[in-house]
Length: 317
Image 1 (cartoon, one colour):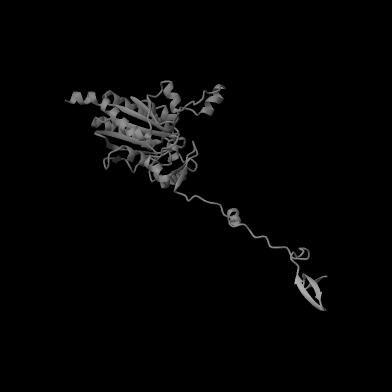
Image 2 (tube, one colour; image 1 turned 60 degrees about the horizontal axis):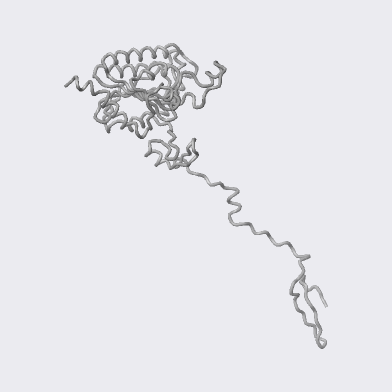
């Protein structure tokens, strides 16, 4: 005989007039409340909280997508260890990687541009980039030692308004070249620029002639000039001093030209060849002399200066 006893199924048996109550071995599941579903461990956390990588520890290479520890990247001068991609670096970092310790004597550090033409928002952009780069303008110039050689060094800062050449940039480079001419020093200019600074109008275009004229006097004294192209070099910079070097070097993957590929394509209505305006393309067509990786740049510069200044040393002896 089966009865319900306090909500539980039981068997009731009689032996000699005595009722014995026994629980059922497998009670039916109907009329019982559903069992609560136990959540999986970590399921809620994985949906609500994503794993985040702290900033300032790792950098993703834009070319091969590998994650690089920032300390390792700094030790390699911002060059990817897997694909050799060259990350942009600041002018100060580049100077530190090339010159001998405590030998860089900066020139005209306080020279700054003025908004003489009252171009819209030009002054605010200058102030913004001065705070970001801690520079007065888009170039750092000075005299230094690279290996055993004293040289005049100018380095463009792309983070300052795209490294554009305005009145101050042209004046600082011209003074650097003229000092190198007076002191019988070789000139090295490292360019990273989008061209002439449009906010200064014709004043910026005049810097093309001024820097080129100073380099002509420098060449008359049989002094070497090495131009190094990095990151991207276009417009008035590439149409003036950047293309006048006795040696023109470039970093791997640097973009070099006068107008951009889109402008050239729209003007000529022709398909451009693969790799157009890269350093590798220009080397194949004889427009630059060598492609030098950033990690090898200092040693190569010392070798080139040994060769280019040998005649001057022989005459002095």
